Length: 394
Image (cartoon, rainbow, N blue to C red; front, side, top):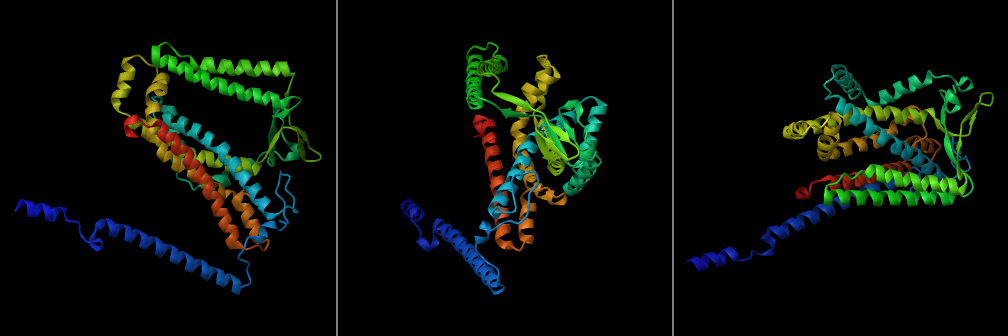
């Protein structure tokens, strides 16, 4: 009886009743159905566009744009694909500057919300509860209104003769290359590599012996020594360019210039997104086991040491996944720059469509570029997230 039962139990069912086969067939059928629906929709859209005389290819990308993009070398005679590149550059620059500022401000405000100082704690709470409950578009419009109250470019302010402040442009000093600049930057790169290697060496010494690593001092010292030596040996390979305001011509010569629209979008989204990251940071710190805080007090750590060595490293493992979502929101919200006319991707795409170019292909390119930005952000942050996870959690 037992042998017969075992034989029945181990008998393989026919393929049309095998659950593994049925799962594969169901998934394959779902993929085929999705592809079929997609093909039907694309063919229908192509037929409707053809009936209306609208092109369905991407040949328009080589045509002249017939519009300008402020503060760039772009001209109306350039092809449309270059306009997309210029818009992508502006969007990417806003993201590259905004995300680090957002992170720093979010961590600062999040930690401040847990401060024992009543004034600091309530000020941080007021900031968070105000900014995160206002639509980002309104934050951008409000920031733009504030910047418009700055002096006109004819009456621009030049504090310390290093900056230019106006409601149209903002300028600051920049580095300019001189003779032997290429060799100098190669030396700086070598200094960075050396600093990284020294950092890892001092960390390994600490792990093996327990002696103080002083890795910041060692690494920064090596970087500074190599960089300064290269600068002195090569004889001023780089210099400082200060912005000069020519009020009558309404232009700024020298330095690095940014449009008020760029400053508006980057600042507004930084303030808005930081209010959300602050709550993520606060919740992550509170999620760290209370025993960790008590242990840090027991060994006599100061508040700064407690956050630096105990709370923030552990809270980072909890905070990074939701922070990735906030980074993606920042990336996508840059499209709201259309409200202030800053020439980022969405503004460029809308202008291209307004000049009589096909909308479906233009919007498809726009969505694809935003998808690329979002995927790059996700990949980088997921790598960081995996690096911070405990070995037992991987």
